[in-house]
Image (cartoon, rainbow, N blue to C red; front, side, top):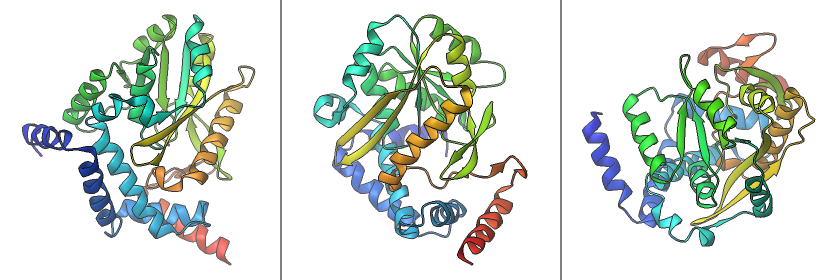
Length: 300
């Protein structure tokens, strides 16, 4: 889609009432959850393998509905931000105040749960000097649009590439600011293998190492949708004495707890377990074959 057409479409969608955007998200998400897409197949297989107690097909439809709702909410958060304390609750408000009172940087480790864009905007509203670390989008147009949307709410984006990002990231930490990153996916960054739903999963660790180097306080932060226009943010500090590997383990344990409680609010179509210490990283087709064989083995 040409850039001007995409911008026009987002402009129109952003001005729709929230309830209408949700209706669109639920309808499109339901439809996507029915189509024989490769990503849908991966979501169903991973749910059957790693969370067999939930109905995989039904949950997959809800995953698409939740994701589209997050995206359509995220293009214009103003209706939520106008009365944000009514829409967003944070049981850890005292911890946030404590973090702000100290002249130390903070590294926030988060994941694709609930509405992570709203969580970032909420933190800025609370006075947190926040920069997010992001992987550049495949389409530069989308990257520009995303950065523009975030900047409206005071969220700065540090794009992680081979040639840039590190200096800006270090500057943020040296200034005592907060840096947040989504670390729940298998990406081409510094990583360690850590148990996730009982199986080793390659998990990003570079930001944790950098945070420790610059004496940052480390926290986990997760957002979940608890009802129409209602969200809860959970923030917990991580023990500074833990090693990098132990910190990743603790993050994955906390995230797993959130996902088990809200299984439809995580991106199950991401190939989370495609890498392993012994077989390397599988192609998509090989990973699908592996999941099917693994399911047969556990069923026998």
